[in-house]
Length: 442
Image (cartoon, rainbow, N blue to C red):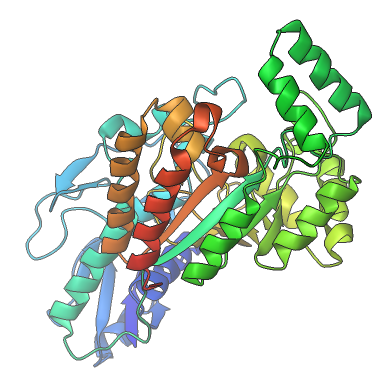
């Protein structure tokens, strides 16, 4: 048991000690603001304050962030330490870290900078190029996990006989967003007619022929890549997550109707082999009634409660998106990633509880950091298949080196091996194989 002393116990400190000391380092701890009790303690102890108290402790210099409330215009300057960028630097004090790992970690995982003034993209999102990590060149490094390793190494050195009660291991979670379940199948009369008219206008005879053969059952729908996915999961004994879009049809929400029997059967089939979650529509992001309705639709199809989610278009507005999700009983969200770039939006690759800076409370929603998305690689970053493979494998290695969780996002259509996605199915196989084997799924 570690005893942690700090002159003032705050919610922010309890939160970040739980994340770093307990969840990432694996140590049980007690926190106190009683200096006399602390000085008389004979076991392993950490002092998080402005000055050391005795020689038997492990001292971390505390910056002011964790004693504050509300949002203030912090402008931290990243500095390299042991090949890892750090913020809230404390100078070169003897025998301690030259930065405050707890304040630094809190700044990143709370997404403090997303509450500060910033320029949004066309979808109203905080994007990668607005982040400190992107601007400073460490977006693709999970620095918070590295901070925890630094802290753990110091604890091991100072107190070699204290043992963690748990050890984290690398894990791999493949996830899929079902934005458009099928290219042609089950679209209904009016959408099918509109598709034919559009192809005729464009004189796209190939598309007309393809659509006709699929409708007549003579050819498989190009977006129907589900058997391939299920076979892959079964081979490696990995349970994926599927997020289903069941919102009303609109310019940004173009999936099958939630009342379409073909789509319902697909949802039921995939949920037998996976964890099914809601993919809240673009239009629901600012409409609580739409969100409630969509969760009810999916729950009715599956006859079970829905606890997992990921926002369509990765539309995440802090803290309001999480407020709405929690109101509807969601406890796991997988939106924490950037559409425009791969990497670590919260500078961490381990699940964590969301801390709401507007209310200074630890919420009960678990944030599962998203690291790579197919569309990010191809559409936003403009990478070809070979460059994408190198990029993703490097990210997998980054997560593996800190015993984190690698979460990928792919879409069923990008596995069709056709059109603009030609060759990407083989890429996914290589990525999946690489991550799964590192997770011990041989």
